[in-house]
Length: 126
Image 1 (cartoon, rainbow, N blue to C red):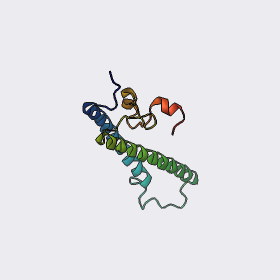
Image 2: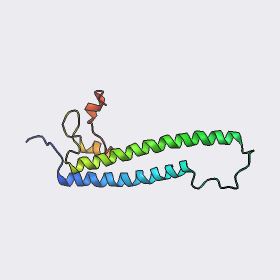
Image 3: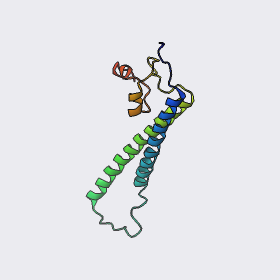
Image 4: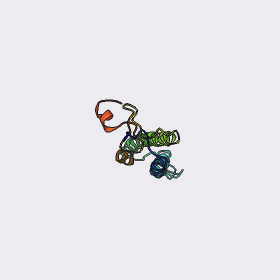
């Protein structure tokens, strides 16, 4: 039997459903992080006291920086999921970009935006 070179349309639809679900969750999380960064539910004009605790401001700045990093990471994850959807449309989804072989379905279910097989990833490819 010849080695499979791509996933069937039915399999691609299964992966599309997984990706769409992860994309929806990721987008909600990104929106939440963005809202936190913009401080939409934060301080009103009533909070103008110049004696506001300096230590709290420092902690808030650190927290905001960390939230910004998380938001950037989440945005990259969203972009990777969107790129995976394009690969599904092109019927190239699930093909390792290093070896040209199919990435196992189990790996794609766990990491649906994967572009490398475990072997290629472990061999130091980036």
